[in-house]
Image (cartoon, rainbow, N blue to C red):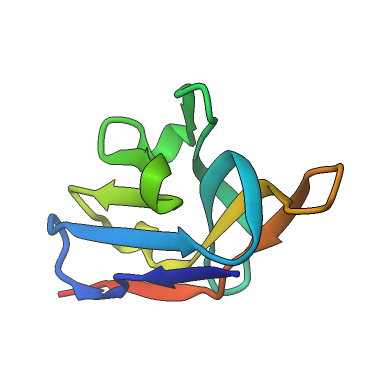
Length: 119
């Protein structure tokens, strides 16, 4: 399972750091990422990182958000700086991983963590 943490209320211009830890009978983890869904909008990719270290960001967060991962801890982080009201959303982590005894990879999702950017 994926367990996300770190959401909350922050003022515009502030910072937050999200964490998401994968646990269970995991053989390997390929990509790990973050998505978000604002009220009335579709879920969108925020940032993703692969096992090889490459990263990809939504244009709206480039230069403000940084995704990183600790492979030893099966954990992905999202450092969010310069937060704006339009960043308000439920943030979801996901991971493309392979379980022990299984020959294929599947996407798994964590529970959402709410971020509200407001003064």
